[in-house]
Image 1: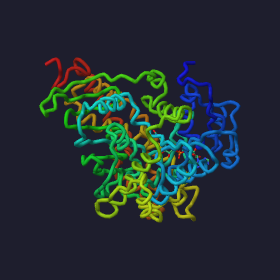
Image 2 (image 1 turned 45 degrees about the vertical axis):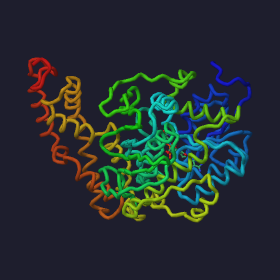
Image 3 (image 1 turned 180 degrees about the vertical axis):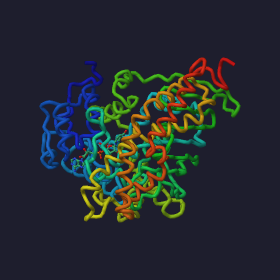
Image 4 (image 1 turned 60 degrees about the vertical axis):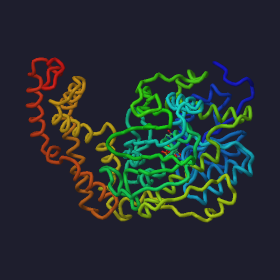
Length: 527
Ligand SMILES: NC(=O)c1ccc[n+]([C@@H]2O[C@H](COP(=O)([O-])OP(=O)(O)OC[C@H]3O[C@@H](n4cnc5c(N)ncnc54)[C@H](O)[C@@H]3O)[C@@H](O)[C@H]2O)c1
């Protein structure tokens, strides 16, 4: 195994929350980190950890976990619990890495920053998106002065993950594991304001430019993507805000679960150069310090030990997070995402949600480095989206035999690979077919059309069941969610699936009869 640090000192790590938390196990081995303990309230997660780290201590009891001989704790528990768990670990003398985001209310942020300062321990936020190859290369250029001063940026983390309200973020035997084969939904994803999950978009911009946010505003947007749980207080499937940065420049921050994913920035303008198309594997720069300057693709390079990072997933981001944390513990050299940067990014999301709730009122972003500034937030527990009770989807006296399939229905229909996606791909792909530029796209649509008749009878069964449940409990969260989902689907095509299958067969026969399948089109590249 390659050695990264010039020391044999080891860090004994415990992982608290064994879903996402387990994805760091692989990187740890390169970085003087021994994963020696795990904690999760879910027995399936504990079993999986025991398989992945044989011999490690594993428990459901957090006190027993923290009593182990561990130097550091990685907190990857439920989103609203991060601050409480981080504070508890710091108070037991552990260094802490916390998954995003750091806290759920400004008052909790004050308590967290004070706990870190009191402890003298290392605290890092596990924000991984700044550490893609493209973003690390951009940061290198930025630090050299290549871009000049920041003017404006557009960053986004748009990720359609509505099914995660009903299922966990991982699969077992190729199937996404349901939160419960019933109606109890996911602990926090089901009710979280999209503004709060802002670190994967604002984070890279902060890291690249070295600037901090100072002001945020967000207009309310009340449109919710069908299939999203209609939780009380859940206001929008998208969170767009404008953030003023500390040099006077502005960025547009967009998060959400919509119909066109983009997990990365964005566009970036400095006074000397610009950048766009920053998706993994792509980066385009505009040079010449002029709007009409030369636009050119570049192939970024990793810093020195980047090849190890490449092996670890998330474009290497997970590796770098652990690397900086271990480096700070082992050498004292500071990591980028310390508690103050964590406060800057986390509170901007909280205040964006507050701005939207107040009709777009601009909010000043406090700097928690300044002890005096913290005082105004010490008792600010306000949570624009109240924590949501995952058992409240149907009335307590609902017929359990009827609602027991709620999560299953939602996953069947709205999983990323679910039936509604196949159906819409066929309907919309057929509409566009003659205008599609890429023969591969035509083949893909034909493949979807061929597979669809086999999916439709099962989809019809789920839609009928969904209708029965929503008719029985029309005013419940579950009932409203199902009714909106059904209204969005081309239901006639689903319910009359034999007729639909016959229409698909007719269309396929016409497409198959084309002289050069998939290549001869009205806009075809053969003229
Ligand atoms: N940076 C990234 O790319 C990225 C990706 C996925 C998730 N995350 C973050 O990581 C965190 C965890 O994500 P996830 O997908 O595993 O979420 P999750 O909510 O599905 O899982 C959290 C895990 O923590 C366990 N847990 C909750 N409370 C606990 C407690 N008190 N004691 C012990 N175990 C407890 C749960 O049983 C579950 O296994 C989330 O906050 C999420 O925002 C970050």
